[in-house]
Length: 281
Image 1: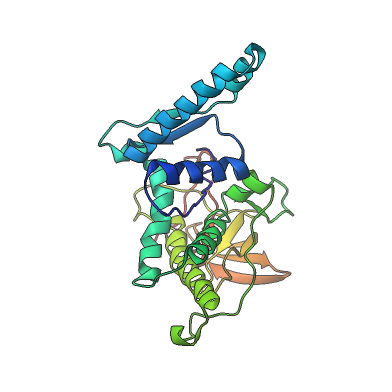
Image 2: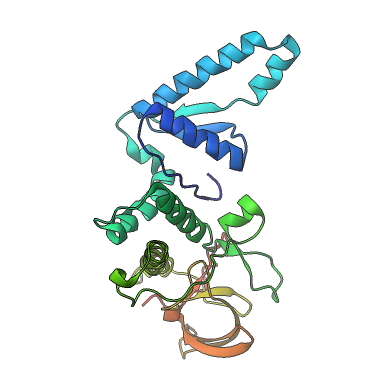
């Protein structure tokens, strides 16, 4: 809920048994969860009842001193009100990020369960690699904190592959096809995500100028899946009205100059002083 990290699982059906199998795979890799939030789908409600039956059955067969331990390690299931999907907007947004583009890259192609699981795992890696904020306050540190840091302690990286977007699908093997689908997903989702980061309402609100030492995300048309080109602001080039339109960046051992329309300032909780402003067009 706090980090918005995403875990994707492929299931063969939407019944209770398939969900319980996916839930067991989840806790086996991620650990027990104390709280679980979902809508009132029949498979979720049925799974909740099944887990309660299993809990009561195990509770009656365990020694008394272990009952309290089992209760403390249990999962509390929270259901949102019926017919109110907007109450689950936090996780629905993550699901939408996947399904919206997955439908468009898959079209009428049929993948095996193994191929689909592999594709979803790579998509999950891409989604959890997105930068949230600078990793530290050290000006020399140009790394960003990602949802993957909370899951595995470091940023995720996809295995580098050759660019297959320009290759005809008819010439690709089955696993090369999966790789091409991943690259197609990354190309679509990456451009959409960067556009949202760079949202510029037309003079509706004041935002602070980019400063020296800020960590920014470069808009790159051909970035490798899972790789986010980060740079540090080294010099500002304000106009006569003190609005910063061009900046000099330090990226990959060299200095480059870019307009602010080609960089995205990472989100921050910093309060904007009234006297500071930024160009929004």
